[in-house]
Length: 159
Image (tube, rainbow, N blue to C red; front, side, top):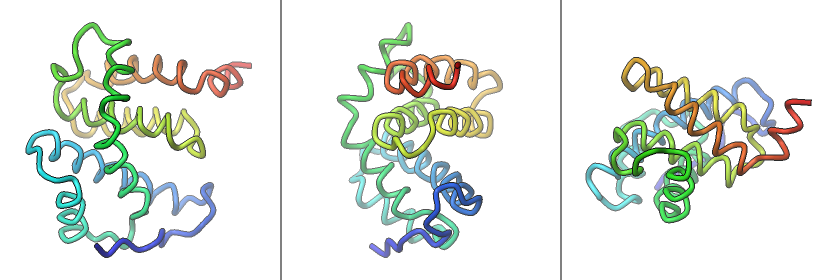
C-alpha cells in the first residue's frame, strides 16, 4: 500500500492540514460505507481507495487510521451510539451510520482534534451526502456522544 505521510504539513492548526483531513474524512466515510455494504476486507477497500483517488492532497495516515479504526471498533462504537438513539445502529441509513461511526471513533481516539471540529465535519458531510434533514439526527446523536466522551472539553467550551 502506498501510504505516504501527510503532504499538507505537520502543524495540525495549519489550514492545509485541516483541508486535507476534511477530504480524508469524506473518503473514509465512503470507504466505511463500502465496507458496511459489501463486507469486503477493509485492507482491500483501503487499497482500492488509494488506487482510485488522488491521495496527494489528503492526510493518508489519518484516512487509513480512521477506516481501520472504525472497522476494528464496531463493538465499542455501536453500543455507545445506541445509548442516544431510539433504534439500533443497523436500522440507521447506511451513509448516516458510517458518519456516526466515523465521528464517534474520532471522539474517542483523536483527542488532538477538537470535538467541535469532529461534530461540524460530520454535520457537513451529512448535509452533502444524506437526506435533507438527516444532519439534525446526526448532530443530536453526536452532541450527546461528545458530552459523554469529551465531557471535560465540552464543559470547558461552555464556560
